[in-house]
Image (cartoon, rainbow, N blue to C red; front, side, top):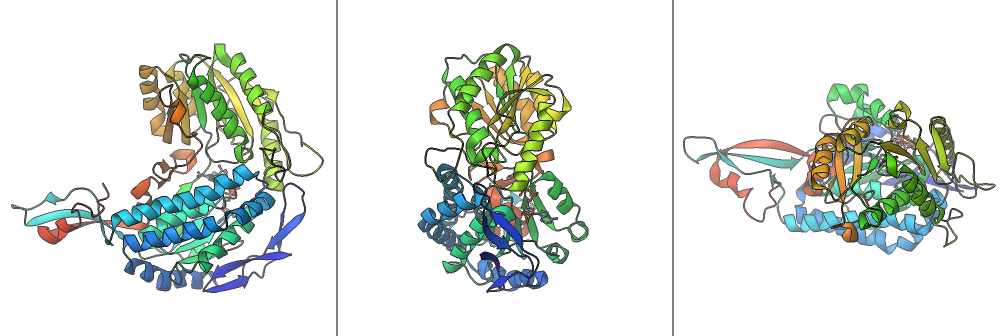
Length: 517
Ligand code: NAP
């Protein structure tokens, strides 16, 4: 059986700890094993700091952008083989596998183009310069320079390709060497991509390392120039945020955690409108794409009380069209959950919600004889105010209808009960209602997706993370921020105010030099 290896210190290292078995979630047959350990975590950090970091910082943005382009091309070249691994390892139907892998290569390509546009600079201006002295000879200019440490990336199991490469694109373009630790359940796909990255020869020595299994005591050895970018549950996020060395050494940390994303239908939306059709299609897509294992998937669906029956019927009909089953069969559009622990957690979560709701379709039962299949499950709250619906994320194909009175203020108050989210989508053609919902929801979210008849035809779904817009959110969602064009680089850079003679300082902000503002 294949044993995953860590690609660290310029070598491929087989772990020494007891094996963790990876099962195909469709057949429950063993696929591979993961063994942690086998290397000194401190040496891995020092290797990144001593080799990868200096080499990347010698390069300008255009050169680092060219690396990202080469990585995008190398991964895309293996697309068909990677789709196969994704189907086996994560139980994703072909469409979902492509979503993950093309998300990875697309994000790399986006940042490659950004690097090219920044050109031969190594220092970025941040905003306009300002006169500080009696005359313009004494000048101030904020700049962004690469920090000197390693970028430790800890990722969730659900997007092994995209999650890994969206973080890598920002770090590498900023000049930071990466130590990647993927979610173990889908690490077979992550390892395959990590090998492509290394074998591409595009990166300097030490700029990319990959750890299969646990990090060991790596976090212990990080210092104030290093960083951790984490994606996963708020439970693990809290452990990392409170890690004694993270607190003691002020290790920079970005947390992308869970989120009870909401979709809100406004009372003005006519059943015959494009906005209503989009609402039904997007909720059904979010519940079934990646079997609902998407951090941006909708969990709470707010509908005006007098529309609840209509929405329930339309969603049941839309969900009924999504074929659930073996993802190797082309007609099946939804596969199993990615692992046994996911299967158990999702079923328990649905059972808990069902105690306070009507099950409109689906339910916690296993579907089929083997494999981790759960049907798309729509619930309808008996009391939309019950804590349960605003506290527990069921990370699977489940969402709850929450009937509300119809005002933007009431919708905002209900959504805010989730304690901070990645994304909320609101469906309305009523300008004042939309402005109220923006005022109510924006402080609680990293992204708002505003549907109307005017954009319906051209929109990309709200669950899709785009590199040009930030991803992250306050509170429960972790308080972090990734992507958003150049904003995504800032985590790996130091902002410093330079004060001195104007001419050299103003040059950093000259047109075409990639001023960050
Ligand atoms: P998880 O259990 O928190 O694990 C996330 C990552 O942390 C994995 O690589 C895991 O490794 C690692 N990890 C676990 N304990 C650790 C520790 N003590 N120290 C260092 N690393 C540790 O989350 P998950 O089950 O993989 O992912 C599902 C969750 O992620 C959901 O709650 C979902 O909402 C959230 N998520 C959020 C986003 C976002 O962008 N905000 C995106 C995707 C998913 P092992 O796998 O080896 O345990």
